[in-house]
Image 1 (cartoon, rainbow, N blue to C red):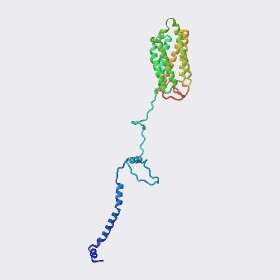
Image 2 (image 1 turned 180 degrees about the vertical axis):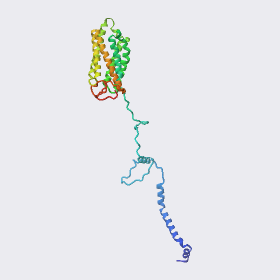
Image 3 (image 1 turned 90 degrees about the vertical axis):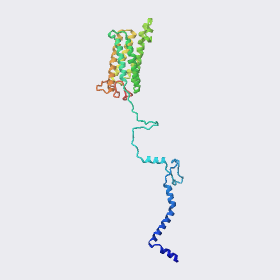
Length: 316
């Protein structure tokens, strides 16, 4: 060791020599780690990448992991999966733009009282005219009632019975509604039907009316056989209707006033029975305290008229 080196060592304080050695070691370590630090900086710096279809990007067949960047869509999916499931709400997803709420199935009203009251009121008027009540011999006053209440109201009731699924009630009401409209047209002077039997053809009018009533007697008889599973009062109503048509038919064929009056009596009985059934149906549908018995012939029937395949028809 020469004198110069000895001089340098002598000029450095003895306590600082270990510190300088540690400083040199740290400096060399930082220089060696500088590439690693730069890589870490590049790794943790956020750069917004282009949208990437994660499903389309598949790794190599060797199964080695592939470096992937997380885009906004991936971040949204991760957040949705991590979030708790929302509570169910009363809403149904549809393809429409508006939210769809569950549809409350509306219950149809019972159209039977309307049809029964229309039939009863018109039949009672006609029956009273046939028995010559208050010495009335011209039944043309029934035309207005037959057009509106007995015809139109019953026809509408029949259509609404189709809506609630009651085929029997729909057929009965629609048929008798058509009967009253046809009868009103016969008596309506502008129709010219009665004028066609004037003069030497006047004798044919009774026979023509007899055939008209005979057709409706057959229809009513078919309806009667369909009431065996309905109720006692409904069967009774159809019995009175059939007897009324039968006696009026015979009275027209034989031109006997007494038989026509007997037919008018059965028309009145049928009308009162229809009023009773209509009141029972109306009170039962309205939930009244006073319910009229109708004598159901089968437990599965609801009231006197409304049966549907042996099951209860809640709408009727």
